[in-house]
Length: 444
Ligand code: SF4
Image (cartoon, rainbow, N blue to C red):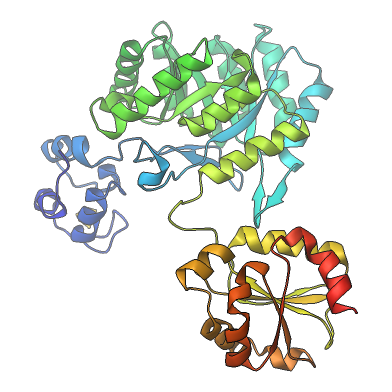
């Protein structure tokens, strides 16, 4: 059972020394109660207090960081089974997998794609996260060479995959300081793999075929002092993955099986229907997903799905209200009013740019609601439009007083005219028709 902040506070040393990063022991206790801090941050806790607090205050799924620098990413630290209960916090890292039997050109090409490719969607830059390098050849030298090629091309988070400790050891000599994820400790080799992870301060994958063995292995590694673990249960079928991954999430967030409280890795290359496996991994709790380099269409599908699943369902992605320019609008440019729901903004912006008619977009604050919802909820109303026109000094920007409103806001047109003194023109309901509308209605 989770402890309350006050109960936790009673167990703290109360030095108020700030070494945990919090100004007082009480604020640290409050963070612990919310699962937002780790007891290890306080160096003065005695073993007994650590034992009591550790079991109840650690985040149910450990936060694990992979890589260093700008492209590093963190996974885990999740609290719910269903996104609508709160939100999912840390999107899975999706990494392209290469092998040391591929040519140097192929390895470099995959790395360059991860380094350079991105696409912008609703204002966010969407990218893949890193490279997984597998030691398929069994050769230590070939593996070290493949890792060198990746390293020369880009500083990206890596997953180092080999059954041979010597191969991983050779690779870690080159890239150990960059916190690659080591794959994988098994019941046979965990001592050596664990020693490597400790030596280089790297996160470690534990791999076992069933949950009992996985939990035991994770516990053993944790007892050995390796805390940053990732679980891999090597599913044979997609159905296996969904069932087991869901069970792990359930057991960990309810703290029924704390030894399973780590992020999960899915190697989609080992399953049929790779695109489907990636989609299932994103939705059903994979935190690290390995895939062969994807086609442009599959890349966009995967990155879009990940973005959608990992946005907060209680907070629509919003734009800052304001007056935005499309091109270099002059005094006679049209002014189009719409809401600050990002998807609405970026959709309309894209279609406006395509018209090549310089224009202004007046974005009003509907707290991220779409036009239809904002009209129904009364958030989009004549007062908001009037105040926004004033606040952003639209009158100073144009020589006319004509305002184009979205088609779905048509019922407000009369009231907006009365409140603002501007002539209201009702635009199309579908942003895709804005080009035709402007050419026919604005330029006539
Ligand atoms: Fe209190 Fe420990 Fe934080 Fe110091 S490090 S303020 S003793 S909780």
